[in-house]
Image 1 (cartoon, helix red, strand yellow):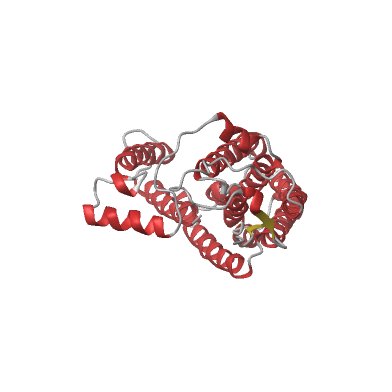
Image 2 (image 1 turned 90 degrees about the horizontal axis):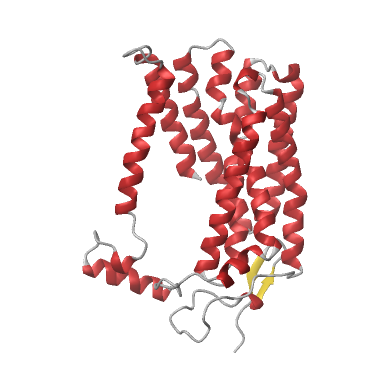
Length: 323
């Protein structure tokens, strides 16, 4: 979550600098330079990450042999699998044949769309009459604030162990603010409300992370099941809101974005019964995913089988193993 907000803050500074210094350079508008520069940076960083980010500690080229052995020993001591296991149709069935991945994906999508106003904040300010450079610069403190809020909420959720309650309260909060921004002047908010409302929906960044907390518990059968579930929820959960945003947050509607604000309000409120449904399924252990790991293998003791999973007041946990 932090990397998203801090990346947004960096992007705001870069966008402001480009708008201020590169407008009409080589016959290109500032936004065109922004696309070119950020696009090239993304390609370079993406290719570098492919070669630099390791999959497993035992084959990481930039670690010394001693560091590799230490990393492997640490994972083994924590009960984590250190050997890759092949994927199978059973793992896919584990993920898609139970309601958890689908419900979690819908919750993630509803939470993810909540931060759309941050993407459009510079456009809103520009169309309210502010200088383009200033408009871009103003996204930086907003993203930094969202990162700080996210850390505090994450700490609170971990401390109290109730991500379900946090999700419900935060989605009510975010939806309420979008409703207020949509109702005031039919979306044409005065500058103070535009700033306060954008900062107020900052928790929408951390709600996406909280929606994945339960996934780590639900799909504890093995690391392949969990990885596939998180990949499915992330990809579809991000893709669907972007298709919705094409119609809901039309740039010609700026600065009001009335339809977009109502859409975000509706999806925030819609996620609340979904969170309650997820909690209910977990509480009653309904259709929990089956364990897929090879129980006869002694090297994969990452977690207990999911038929030993129980449910706490707020989500799935593991019961203590019986002698």
